[in-house]
Image (cartoon, rainbow over all chains, first blue to last red; front, side, top):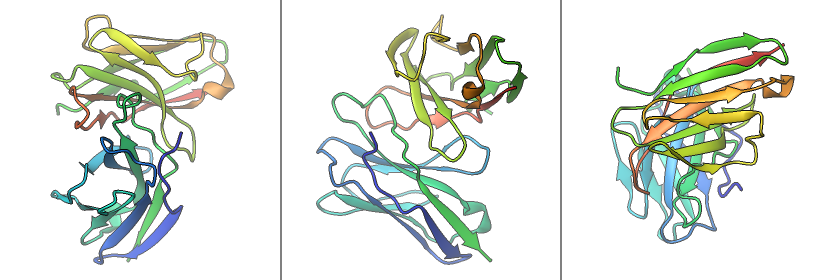
Length: 112
Length: 114
């Protein structure tokens, strides 16, 4: 039931911005976009979520396109500790708002 | 630390044995979720509680699996007659009510069935 499409892996240089794309072309009007990440052998960590407006917190920024069919997670200054699998999740439709559907995510490799 | 706590962190068991895992959610969270994650895959939904009521179960949750949340606080996940295919990380998460809420995950229990 994956509702999102993400690249399998991406590389980023330490100190540079990491831009992780996500396609969610079938998103409906009341579904939120969530981002989590998972560092090896740990539980998923919440990053950010949004509905239609761009969002920013201390960890990242979330840019959602006007048609809401895609979004980008931005880590402004990636560090080696940001190496993880990043999951883009669509949540909130009438039948599935109790669950978070995780796909395979994007493995972000931050390199020195 | 007031995050989601899971116990034990690791469990090795022989095939056919029963195992039980515990999850303590964040105290004011009335929603609790169990997920399973195998190597190289994203977490897969198993079941969900709203307070003490188990409102949804995935078809992944075979009849050997049972989850409880008796007082609406901590939860247990029991696997009976374990099989090698049950080897996985079992993750618990909790959240407040609402569609615009984030879920916080514990560190998981890694089960190895030998």
